[in-house]
Image (tube, rainbow, N blue to C red; front, side, top):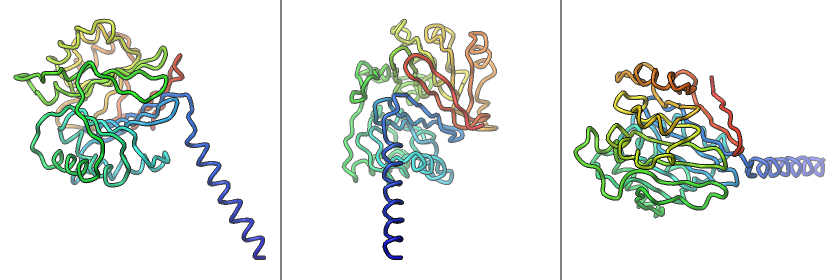
Length: 288
């Protein structure tokens, strides 16, 4: 009887180990999940040859998306460590949920725009990064994020000298990434507005991307026509909350994407949206 119990326990342990190894094997697919964090942003990237990145964390406080959405999602994925955590800018709907993430997961590296902002959620974020002695650095346009095989990650914004005097300096100095995997690419444009988009026009054809994370929840102050003409995306993902008081996404912006023939996905209507690619083709999976 004791031997039978021992064998059952041994077989169970082996099964758990094997499935754990299977789940953590590189899939050679790039997967970018735009999480449904309401009115805010958060995206989790799984790279084709291993490694991951979390970008932003939605709201904190009473509506802590770190607790409600991010932590359960990451645990379901079997994530024990976040290799790179990127805060695009310190507005509450991007930084708020990251405190919970920092308390619950190991983080290898924190990247951010380096903008000053004296809010509790941002100061708590910085305090936890320092307390846990996490590697930290500020990034600027012209730099690259290294360490992910077969994937090129370029930082296009903010400029070395931060923009000043714009409609929203915090938004316009957001970290913007261009991620390229073989023939497929994504432009992750955070909350940039018209002024930052105009600055990005200097990149020309480098902006052209298969998919774009629509700037600033589809606000009419973003997604300008000259900018979109260069990006020319096949797919656009809008991270936005249901019945939000800002009127996001703007009907004007939606029409602009429609006229370009761009397929639009929205987290308020379809839940989490996952962009998947093998480097040659791509497909989209939604929660709803």
